[in-house]
Image (cartoon, rainbow, N blue to C red; front, side, top):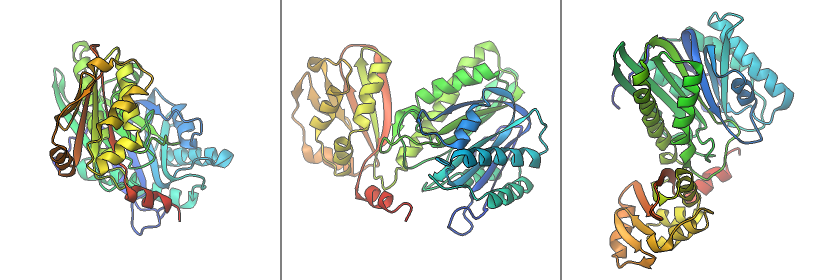
Length: 396
């Protein structure tokens, strides 16, 4: 893994508090700003919402956030009044531990099994241990990343560094998620930190636009979580000129896309990451819905699992997406092989296409649906027996 560029003004830690059943697995993380920082967030649109989401989304955007406290192994979702009290207690314990002031706030994230109360004694001990191990730099950042993981097979981290007029701006992100991933939001948990100077409104707008083209365009099985949270923290160290904002936003979007793609790439039991690129739609929103519909088709996903170039499943999914397409101008390429064009099947070597799917982790679907300017890309995983096996025994 290449070196991470970790922004100035933050400390990180991840420790094992015994919340997870696996011995020594990290399950409490802290991400702390040295001074109150700018914060913005995007959260699940599920009507069943976990207590930490309710708590955190009420606090952002803001200029007085000191950081985020995260636990894994327990979602603190569907836990009623006690769940809200526990989320607030987590925040207060973490804020007090780092010497926060009364007018400052601490965001909270939780992930894991739904419907179980948090073991608050373990949480408290974990926060104390995490506070004592807070540090700057890459190793501490990775420890915090380990503490937010549940069924993840690997760490999901990305970073960028940009030279600006007033100095270099760094941006680093961590994410977790491998199952229960459905768009709007689809992150499970993600935190991006930067040392750029940002206003709360600028941070909110940048993050929402980046989320719409990254985390909101991934899926594993289309099951929207109760806990999805994406947060941007800015330590406000390096000034950004007005003419540099667009470049900073582009860097944030690309970082979020690279982070988001790692989630379906790690889909539980997945053998393929599927990239679906739709072009020629009337609008970007139309292209988004068409790509989303294809991504959520179990028939498409299982065809990719088996290396089956069953293009009819893809084209028909586009047809029922509820957005206008022009069949006479519809064109489909699978891993670069042209299978369907101008409303007609095309001759192709089925064995060669099948081999191209089987021999690579990534599969690309390029679909042109008309002559419009709308285009969008979605990422999803394939679907196989291992996913069914894993999720049939998740809590037992």
